[in-house]
Image 1 (tube, rainbow, N blue to C red):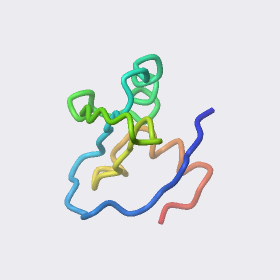
Image 2: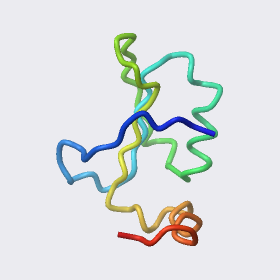
Image 3: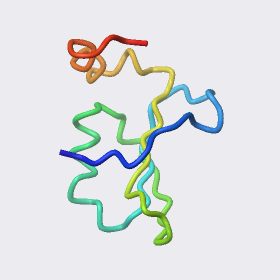
Image 4: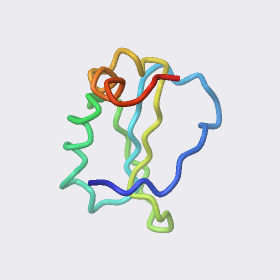
Length: 81
């Protein structure tokens, strides 16, 4: 139910935890849903509002990807890398 506009590698691979960065102020209606779906620690949500971005949010998959509850569900359908 979400549009993924693009995906790419982060600027570095030193993210120990999966993070969510919110870019648009009007995303509060589904921010908590994304946190619940991906099981992201709410303390790892940051707000970098920028009206010039086309993205509403950025998800950075950290080194904890295989410890997230969502990993188990996704790996039932897709082969882990």
